[in-house]
Length: 320
Ligand code: PSU
Ligand code: MN
Image (cartoon, rainbow, N blue to C red; front, side, top):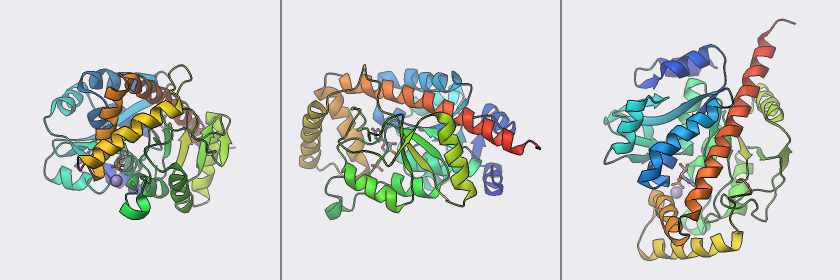
């Protein structure tokens, strides 16, 4: 945990739960979880159950979950049951990318954090691992629209291992990998060379590195930090085989959803939530089942990496 992190945590408007504060102070593994996936990525009936299951998945690996959100103007790291209920029942929750967090908080609002925003806050308080579903990326047609998610820049800037099932094929995946390369973000497949496409285990693309274990990821992450590489790392964990969906089937639904978004004038930050909701309908709920399973799998892998990293940091701190 760096000095900047300690200073940020002391700012009154960043509130760590007691559990997260204790875990960080004791050098135990902590895994950040984002809230956009909850508030804008899943149907309302699924949200509370998923939030709890994600936290349980992290705990099952001996790590502490830290769900991040803006609650009534406070940037919170680790939510208690009341805060979570407040977040999930609020009539309006802003989708906050990194640039939005402070503004929404200053206004006293409610905000769900994206990957970029969750990396920002996690790094500010010294949380080094973050598990999510999928990251944002370069959108199809980005050469025209310049719609490239701030998630990619955030990965290059904040020292956080982000565990995801890659990015959805509604994005331009080759371009997304190019932007990550330019941002100095190592991309590792967790026990696979395939770059997953969220609902599917493959995308037709491969990643530059295969990580064989959580310990290996922890070693690489600690070393890149020691070498002065400022940013994070993208660890790609494909969806569990039992729930993965065939790529061509998903692509047809995605094309239809994107056409509808375009025809309906849905742009910018609203595109992903719109498409997710349409995919759920077009697939008869199958994408939601897959999304849930992959998010839980990522939370488990995040827990493993956090535990491995905590062990590594403890060993490094011990006199020889
Ligand atoms: N991809 C998903 N589900 C999600 C998101 C992305 O499969 O819920 C969310 C994440 O929070 C991600 C954000 O950080 O969308 C990216 O949004 P944008 O493309 O507007 O930057
Ligand atoms: Mn965008």
